[in-house]
Length: 101
Image (cartoon, rainbow, N blue to C red; front, side):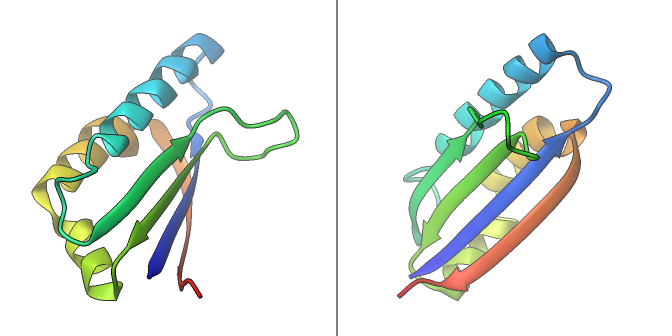
């Protein structure tokens, strides 16, 4: 199994109320991909970080293998969500992909 973990920071220009709505929209969009992409085993978005956090959101997803992760990256359903709900609103993205034991 391959894990795909992403941390995002939202752009500073958004108010706290706007950020809350953006995070909810990202969560709904990404989690709706469950069952639509071959090899995607699990997908969850965490939007309620503690005050000590320096990221606004986290994607925690699991794939059958590395080929499935590569397929997800270019899958039209994923690209649509990323281009409409994530990328326009984020200022930074950190990623860690690894084989889970």
